[in-house]
Image (cartoon, rainbow, N blue to C red; front, side, top):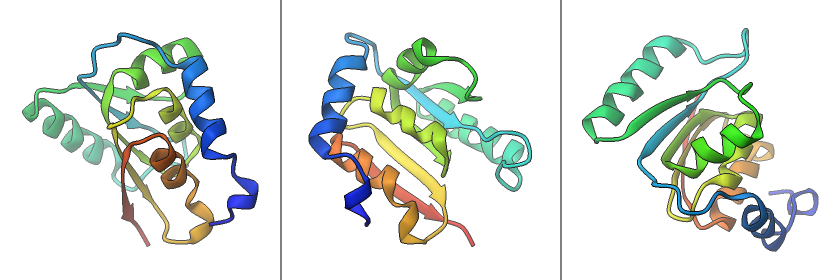
Length: 133
């Protein structure tokens, strides 16, 4: 897993303790987008399907573009029950999410891409990986 280059679980939890928003109602699904040219295949269709799924579950939906700033990230990810995103820097915002949040990472199977699973588990979240080829 390359833990020698990853921060300690204690360090990750301390960052969340310092930065997380307290008292936010958790009722959202956040889909983490990608920058132009780096998106998912069929991203628009997939995002719409996730929006409908969230609506069916009674969740507020938010599409995270990545340019909203840290304060907005704290609010959006702090209110998430579910975070879904393709492997990329936007998933680092789960540091603002609460224990028990479900994180679904879409990405490659290679072990060097394991950092968000490690981070989610250290923060007490449920982590799932959808592998693409």
